[in-house]
Amino acid sequence: MVMTHASERIAFFDVLRGVALFGILIVNVFSFGADSIAWAGPLDRAFWTLKHTFFESKFWALYSLLFGIGFYLQRLSPTYTVGRAVRRLLVLMVLGCLHGLLFEGDILMLYAELGLLLIGSQSASQSLACVCGCCAQSQFSFGAFIRG
Image 1 (cartoon, helix red, strand yellow):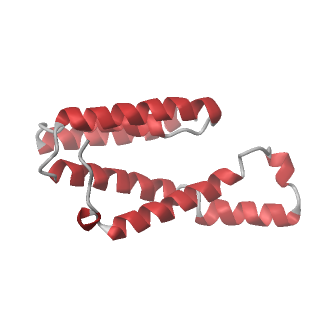
Image 2 (cartoon, one colour):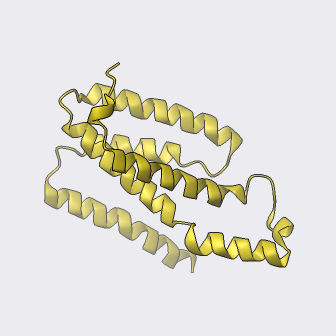
């Protein structure tokens, strides 16, 4: 296993990753053992609204962006190999499967799946990548349209 030296890491991204994980923890705290009925008091509703307004989705997006940046930086590394990247993503998939047994809101498996998709599409042309990205993005809108 190749270890990254502290001098090679980008501290800014590490700090942002920590902030994103803290924000995700704040969002998930509300679902760790209580239904919405438990948050019925006025102070509880105020905290839920604060969480919903300032934390929900923002930190997921930040963490997803950092996942992509980390993937890109790994690809630039002189020690990068496809086999190593696939191994890391498979470990992430196993961790996601184990985490999914404990918590229904797991996203680690999705990160692993999308990472494998990224590895498979590394040699695609820019126009093909753009078309695939637009199709993937439009599926969410199309699904919302069908559900009404």
